[in-house]
Length: 483
Image (cartoon, rainbow, N blue to C red; front, side, top):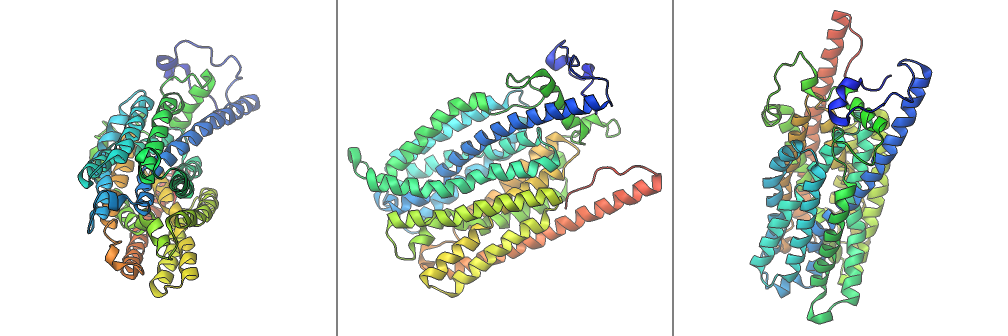
């Protein structure tokens, strides 16, 4: 398999001798040379994925630290009553809903999306600090809205960038590594909050929950400067961290997979990515499934509260939050790796969701401290499902990068309605058992599975149709959807 013809890359890389070390296409030496370049390219890309994971961890920490702050006196200090805390969580996701699609449309048109995302990272650090200086519910509400507004750019943007570098069978594992940043935030966030509560409460006259936002927001601002150099742009943008051959191969790898409608002369003029995505009922189907999945996963926003119902103080409760997510992160890596290896998505999604249903069911029917804590381990297993779903979506849109960009943002945005509504599932008056909340989560989980089954059956039928057409026309086997 040869590298790209020079004509396809001159406009990007200039007149460089890219074939100086590569033999004639089709020779074993050429194949070996490509393998060497590809390994080097993937190794460099994976290093940047680790940085993206770190940033996503900060993103999730800044998003979820409000739950830890609740145990440290945030509600009392801001004189919050009724469901104002639920509104504080819900408002952040309103910003997500408004921003994700416009952001990915804009990002797809940029030559250097790293600058855009780095600026957004800096802003969400500032808004996190703003939450720390809030003196009223209204001020905190505004800071959380704008925090969600700028944080919304990161997940769909980074996911789209990765889809432009990795092939479908490579993307799944990288996406679960990326999504593991959210699980990592739930592992390290509560112990950090516990440490701040134990050591910094009252320093300079500030309660511990304010220091929580100050420290984490400042760290985010520092990381934003690093992001300028470490977030990858698109393969078509010259990168100093790649050799010329690696850059060319990165572009060829995307062309070898059917990923852009403009490369197919039979497709004609490309329609707007927004129109293409919104006109595709399968995108809506997956969006609805992810909305219910997000509503089911709302327990994560209230995890410290659920642990606190077992009767422990803030410091111990926060420390007890980590073990379930540690187990969830470990099993997530195994599940996603197996999903990539078997090229199967549906059962690898529904399995973890059913594990969560077991956890919800246990907590619905008992208030025993040990058993309820065990149920949290079952719930945390569902964390991999969203990663598999977004990878499945990216794998299932081979026609157009612009459509893929919008579809990823749209599904992520639509799922924000589940996050927004899910914030009101956990009404304080339903505690400490929260049995009604768990029953709602069970309903959301089963609805998710039903919608995913519809999506899966459609892709299976498309694969059957493709096979019939190839046999009828005498064509070789082509693209198949991962189911």
